[in-house]
Length: 212
Image (cartoon, rainbow, N blue to C red; front, side, top):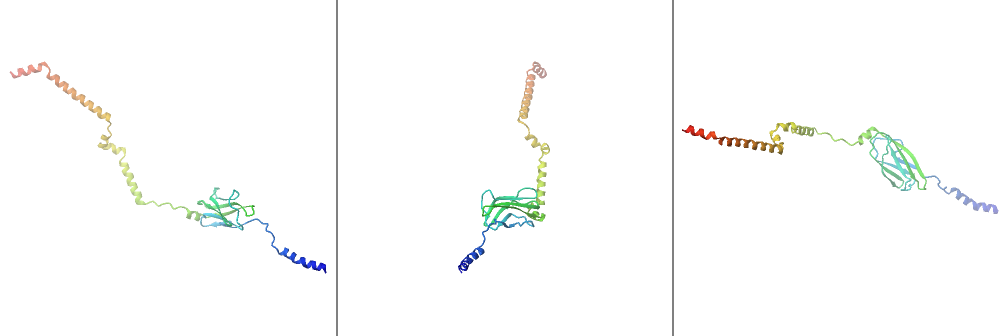
């Protein structure tokens, strides 16, 4: 009877231990992402968002998200953003179609690192739609520009040579001074010749004989 009584007392405690939840020994895991793994996108994404079952530890050098394009270049931009169970990073404009990889490493809530690699693809249409539009050339503006270029050609050195005013404006001060010196010398020579002719002896007697 004593043994039965002891067993009856132990049974509830044993049942309670069996029904109690077991301690969680599993580490945090990735539960979703945007873009999704192996997804093909018709629009270019502006960021990558990773979602975990628990909030990862923020900051530190142990967390990183690297997005590599088909050209082998990295396209993540800015620092990681932690928002509850979400970790996100911005993307630079994706200008090439093809497959992109998302390599991530974060520190889980229990201090253990979580790392993996996802992929997504971008179509040609998505890249073309995201490309900046080039401004259309205005035909009227092109004609006006052509007219301005024509006027500029008319003012070339050849046209300046045909313009007397341009030639005169291009005369150097040295040439002007030389011309003045030559003119003064010529006038002086003429005056000298006239004076000598008036002072010649035969000139006065000849005039007197003619008057008689």
